[in-house]
Length: 211
Image (cartoon, rainbow, N blue to C red; front, top):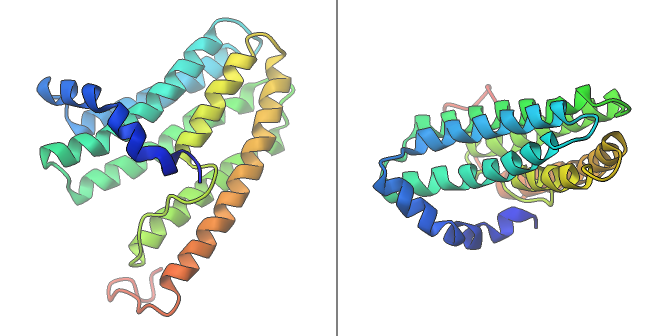
C-alpha cells in the first residue's frame, strides 16, 4: 500500500540520476541533507503561497524533490558501500525534522484549522516513531500503510498545484483531512504489523526494560 509499494520501480527510474551522483562524488549523507533542505523549501513555499501565487509551485516542486532525495540517499549508500548505523540515525533525524518544517507550515495558512494541523503532526510523528521503534525492538523498519512519508509529500505537491487555481486555505484543509485519515489508518496498520511481527518474540538484551 502507498508509494513504498512501488519504491523499487521508483528507484530504478532514478537509476541514471543515481549513477550521475555517484560519478560526481555526491555522498548519501549529502543527499539526506538535501532532502531536509527540500522539505524546508516546501514549507517556505507553503507559507509564502498561503494566499495563493507562484510560490506554491516551489512547494510542489520541492516536495517532489524531497521524495527523490529520500529515495536516492539509501540507493547511493548501498551502491557505494557506505551504509553505516549512524547514517540511519542521520536519515531518521533529517526525515523527522523535514516533516516538521514541511507540514508545520500549514499552521500559518489562513482558515486552516489549527487543531487539524496539530492532529496531523501528532499522527505523523507517532506513525514514524512506531516504524522506527519496531526495528529497535528487533523487527523491521515498517513501511506499511497508505500514507507514508512519500505519500504525504506527493499529496502536498498535488494540493499546492490545485491551490494555484482555488482558495489555498480550502484546498489545504481538504488535503489535511485526507492526510489525517490516511495517517491514522497507517498508524493502525503499522501497529498491527508490529504486533504480528514481534508478539511472542524475545526482547533484545539491551532493550529489556527500556522500550
